[in-house]
Amino acid sequence: MTDGHLSADVVRELIRTGEAKPLLAGTEVGPTWYADHWWYVPVGAADGADYQPADRELSAEFDRLRVRAQAIEDVQAELDGRQ
Amino acid sequence: MTRWGFGRREPVSEPGRDELAAAQQVVDMFATEALLALDRYEQSFPAGDTDRARRTADRLMDWWRKLKLDDVRLDPEGSDAEQILVTAAELCFDPKNEWGVSLEEASAQAVSRAALEGRTMPTTTVADLREDFEDAYGGRAVLPERDNDWLGQSLTRLARASLLRDVIAEGAQVRVSAPLREAGDELVRQGQRLMDDRRDLARRQEAPISRRAAFAQQVRLTSTYTAYSLGVDLTGAPHWADLALKAPAFALYMKETMANWRDHSDTVASRLDPAQAQLRSVRNDLIGTLGTGPPVTRRDNRALRNAADRRPGPDR
Image (cartoon, rainbow over all chains, first blue to last red; front, side, top):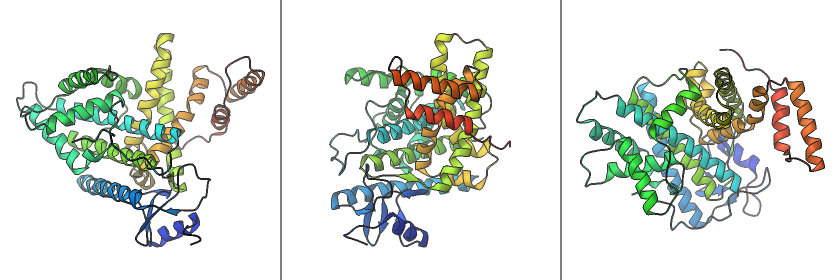
């Protein structure tokens, strides 16, 4: 971590080892939960830009979105179970 | 119940307009698919079944609640399909409405509400959606056997797409992983073949030239979401496709890739071979440079080159 930022490579490795969890499955860049904080790369940042911590307001929004993401996964599991 | 996008806080950084527009189009695609699925569910009851409206409403409410679609920021000026679907859900959840819901009623109410609120009124009917689906996909769609399953699957895709859009709207960058991009390319090839087949059919049927542009547009849109939605069936259910279809960013990637295919499709429609297409590209470049004709974007040229270089997909 440098200056409160995380490089994209570090986040990718954290996701690979299960220490960090992306909000959206299947993404290599996107909001990610790690060490009790949300990290993200702002839209418009250059390719390969570092992750930065989300502020409290944005973190609350990501929390809400995570609840929706979990609901989707629960329904998907139900649908998969029918096949 | 539904949040209409008012009173939202501003995102930390302004999301890219193009990215947000593309994500919204993916939401539109799956709203259309969900309406088709709801239509099929409604039509599965025998004619004259007095419980049809109530049972259709109960089924839609069940999926809507499970997927927490109430929390989705639906666009009041979204596509016709989005407006009709939201109206159908609102009718279902109206405590004073014991009758239930029909798509016909939801379509009529969506028009009335838009008129009252001074918005652009939806012009698409469910009959239009059925016809477009048939035009674009013919009898080649392999739909889930159980109507309720298709409804659940399509609403799940809508929920995923809207989640992705809302993440982008918060100002966060999203990029699909490399393995899924490769999986996407394969599914896109399936969709492209469908598009070419349907366009070829339109030519053979000598559709009026005035209708061809609209037809091509609809074929592209419908082929994209049907290839995506039904990709597992189309490709013989490979494991990677199954994974890809559950990644919301994948839909966005696929939609953008399909859009780039437009130039290729136009080339096919004109019966040009790749070499001729390349020549046309060069000629357009020159015209663009001289500024005497419509400029050809770098994206256009890249799409043409990609079309010429594209590897044929495996036959399955």
